[in-house]
Length: 345
Image (cartoon, rainbow, N blue to C red; front, side, top):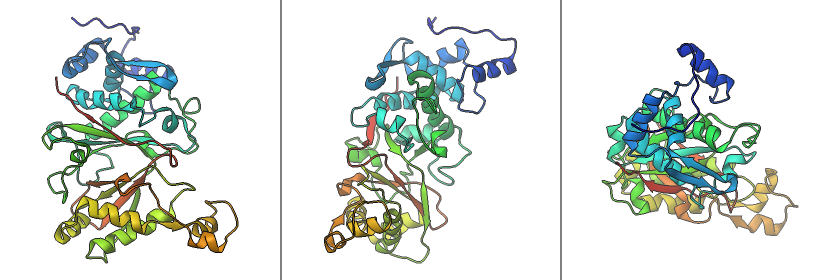
């Protein structure tokens, strides 16, 4: 028998339990599943966790995030117990200094936690990596991402208008979780770029702004597709370099890369060189201060610091000529993506 330490509440029925969660401020605006002791225990057992086990410590908030609290929020989000190892690895990653929880979680810029899952576990738990990959319809994608946002709110205190000072926010702050389409990808699985083996399970978190979708049905070469990608990214560039960008390529654009034999590194290098902007171009767009001069016309600035700061991912439907990019949060010292192994009990 697992001993739970969280405060218990009693209600007359399911409807009352849901309304209690609303009255306590424990929801994201949508109804939640009441976290009964039985459901919490099942979540902990699936993760091989003890209730008081610390999964992460959020330094700026001085908050210890325990397995019991994470399990409670996973239940409320609608997760199945078998999702718990993915959630656990994500919670661990949030405390990594490279990610820097406080900045992206509290900024007026309003980032969300984008989660990319790799390895056999994605298919095992029914994650979507194909059609409508950022949309509705898949329980694992929807509830795993939702569990992280509820935990951030209910355990760490990242509440809108209080600690979360986002001016606008975006829908990814409900849930922002996908799997990579490793089967059809023209490249090795993303987590192998972080030192993991293909057969290992891993989750990558990325402090992300909204998804920017673009279309290119005219090009039959990687250069042609990426010309559109880079033009779109230059248009949305901020005053400073972004720390990282995720470049997500769907089926038809994946095939173009594959037929041309372009590696992930080829994509990164092309994007790095062709997404540069002159200081003058940024001044004309009012995203950089100062007068336009001959020097500012000639001075070029890269979108990110290194080619490796483009996170190249394969996901999305096989039909259609759409792909997308996702800007990271912050300027040159912004949050960095972090990859953690998903450990099965």
